[in-house]
Length: 201
Image (tube, rainbow, N blue to C red; front, side, top):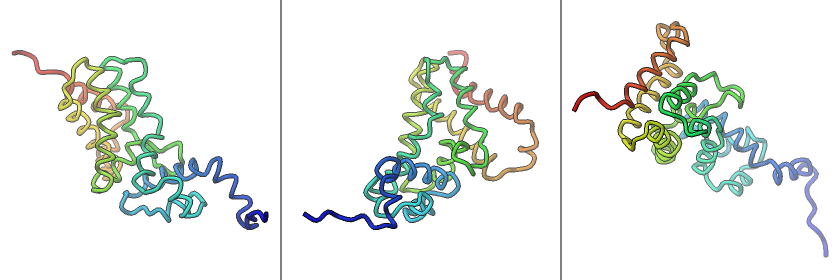
């Protein structure tokens, strides 16, 4: 029985696609989604950056939405914020550590918030982002403070996203010139205040 012959141009690529092709696609997608909105990033862009065929991207993930979902989940730092059942203050410090973003030119510089600020206004990505924020940030934050007031958690996270967007996207010089340590402290205090219930009856 004749066997299928792999074209010479594909010989080097075939093993990569079966062992690490999905990882290459995810890595490429993380960098692209960190620098461009979801709506401006195509499967063809992702395939080109990963050096794979668009057809392989379709087979591996099925849709751009699934790639975006997997890219968010693959960014590990979010998973660390609830490690060890931290108290509220510890959780706030860990969340603040996520807020100071670097220019995402390298994969190790990409953080979940890069993807969130780039694509949160895109209707197709919004449901994915909302679910991610709920499960990965709002619920752990509420638990760390020993209550189930998700409204306070989402208010605190709105302060976080506003700070990150203002700092990373608009880059006002008066804000950027404030020492990062001072910015961190101000953000930490704002988030703590948002999560603490008001005094009195």
